[in-house]
Amino acid sequence: MKKDEYLIVRADVLPDVFRKVIDVKNLLDSGEVFSVSSAVQRIKISRSAYYKYRDAVRPFAETKRGMMFSLLLQIENFSGILPAAMEAISNSGARIINLHQNVAIKGLSTVLVTLDDALMKDTTAELLTRLRRVHGIRTITIVDK
Image 1 (tube, one colour):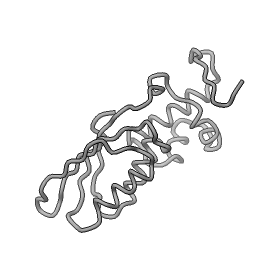
Image 2 (cartoon, helix red, strand yellow):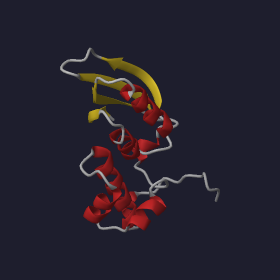
Image 3 (cartoon, one colour):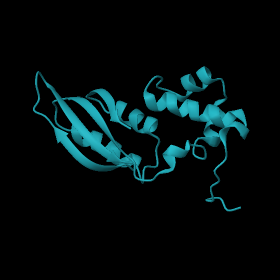
Image 4 (cartoon, helix red, strand yellow):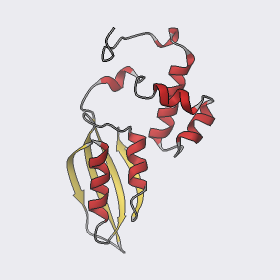
């Protein structure tokens, strides 16, 4: 069997670790937890098991390529914050479909970014982590996923 060959297997016949990896990914994607360590502790699997299977296991619904989703960012109105956010998105491999920034009110601006994840090399959780590292981004909300 080739490495890039896929199988569809009913979930109840798979080892429990695969379901737990998906549960960890869901916790991270939802923003309920912000670190892999917290997520694996909550789900009760090892970090090594998560990292071993994270790129190989996903729900069938996620196998469609080119899913779009939107992020709502609240950023401080200083030079360089928006370009830094766009660089973080670009580094994740996501393609920016649309970008809308409103006028700053009280030093804060709202940015709506619609992304295509077809070529994304990071998970949504990893993208959110990248964005949280950008100084000046106050809040990040996933609008549609």
